[in-house]
Image: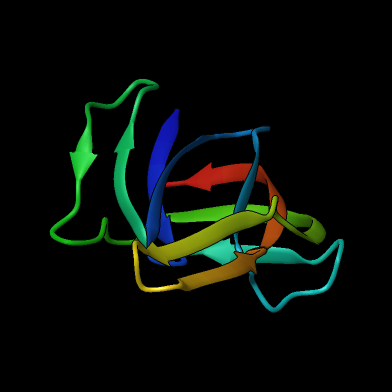
Length: 104
């Protein structure tokens, strides 16, 4: 069984036992969290359920594994012939979670 969830403004297709990195969630390491914004359920013995916008009563349980920062993204802006150059960098915070169960 799989689910499409929404967290941090992005959508993810998840299955039980999968690890993924999502936008930072304010939770402690080892804490069990509930992701209740389920957009779609599929697989298993039932047909595909598509929410409008959310599937009623569906939840995804996950465990927080770690917090971290992603790779550095380098930003370089330049205007030719104007003697203008700007360098900037950014590292996005993330939370790594492991999906433990999908409840329909």
